[in-house]
Image (cartoon, rainbow, N blue to C red):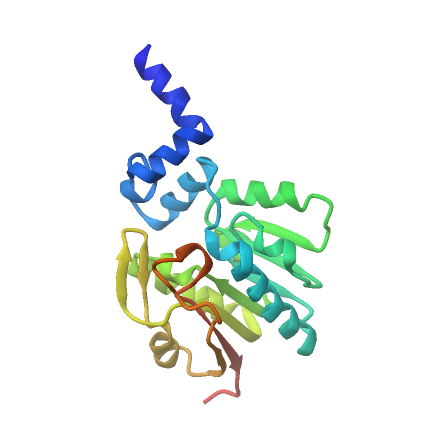
Length: 231
């Protein structure tokens, strides 16, 4: 009976807040891999994180919408669509969102059920076949890919599915920050593995990370790559 009571309390808003404060029962404290982390997080009614909300989401949306309009982008693929909140601010003609979490896909399909310009797919080899867009994006994702093989496969897919532009919003230095957060200097990987791509823009985010205000600041900046002629 006591265990049943604990489970019931744990599912309430108060219980979830207590778990977060006490650091008990959190997904990060029971980290078993990036894919399982995000699936469990969304199943437990978590969200995509503070970077997809508040002033950070508004800043990202303004930057991305302006780029899409200026470059006449007609198709966008995002790898790591998450809970879809950031996407509610987007203005894209045609969008495909991929995610490793089925729960995240379900959330987005419900949120955008009346929007035929958007499609959401689980990351599988079959779903990735013959997918290409003028712009592919990675927003607040790379530093969550803590396994080297997962990171490498993700970066390959991100660049291989774009015909023209790649936008990355991430940190760019090597540092382990938490069990589920590993910052990587990804620009070195691009230089070594994607020689047909040139970085054309690096925009520092106006709200650099402040440990006293973590929910409204970020370790990430914008990096834009453009495909060039074969070298």
